[in-house]
Length: 334
Image (cartoon, rainbow, N blue to C red):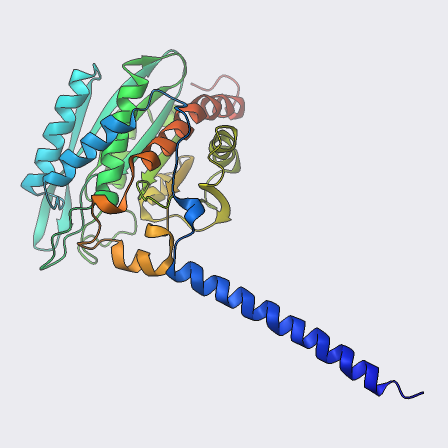
């Protein structure tokens, strides 16, 4: 009996199914590149921490109203003044670290700002983010998500934690020089992070740092935080377990993508470091190119619910991070 006929039909059927699946996958990728997934639009069913999204949003509105805040500018100084006043009102001690970096037209005087929530146990967890915005000739870049979201988030997290807590101390750091023009500062890691990592040594607390968690682009209405493959597994797991437990697993994703520049200085210094960042602003590749570091990075593109989601997750992850760090310390280490 001639088997060629049935074999050919079977081949055509399998080939046709394969082509259909391939076209479906391609169409799905194209749709994701152009249109954000509705499931990524952040909604908060109930509060899971003292982090107040309304206060965080008011802070973000105030910072954005200052306009573009390039490193070394008067607007960046005004943002520091606001942060300092709010932190002091919340009862947190505030310190500054002045340093210099190469700017587009010569040396720039930059300033890192940091506050401490004093803990009752050994160890320091650093939460950090850049507060300056990118300078673009001819464009008004107010950085609602790029710079603004991290600035407002850190301030409200400081209020949520308060002056004292039972676990590790938490230092909250607003870093300058994160958005210097390409070529102005030749080092790979941003100037503010490098300066602050060095300052931790100067202060004699470097060996007490349990972890550094940097936050960046976390105000995106279509929040999707990817795992940082360069972070210690125990540190990433502590944060992602918290996200799953609190119901934010749809926004703290299992996919991995190399972290941005914000965390590099701390990683280069040898500190356990994790970047919490949304690498796709607006939920799609097309929107990211349109929004990131442009005049379209405005309040309309961000949500208080996104700040709240990240606030809830990290607030509850802090104790796990501190506990895991202690288990890994050599006996008798100080």
